[in-house]
Image (tube, rainbow, N blue to C red):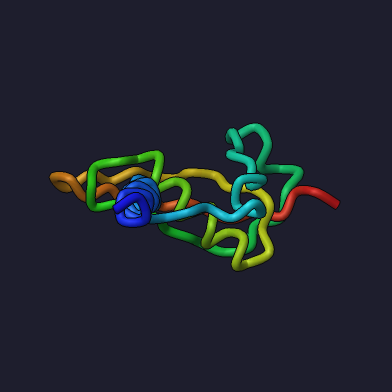
Length: 97
């Protein structure tokens, strides 16, 4: 019985996360202000999307896409909300040398 209780507890704890983990590299991606853009090299457009209404999670997804392009910074160009669906449109940049 104790083993069953521990298994239920562990499974409950494992399911508490948001379901999407952000990588350490994506955590290091900086959000830029317009004044910072001149000292950075643009790489490509990226998007992030969240269908639960979280702009923060959409930005995190855009950061992950930026890391995939070897970018270290992100400038958010637009945020579009359509009901609960949030889309972040951003440009990935390389700023650090």
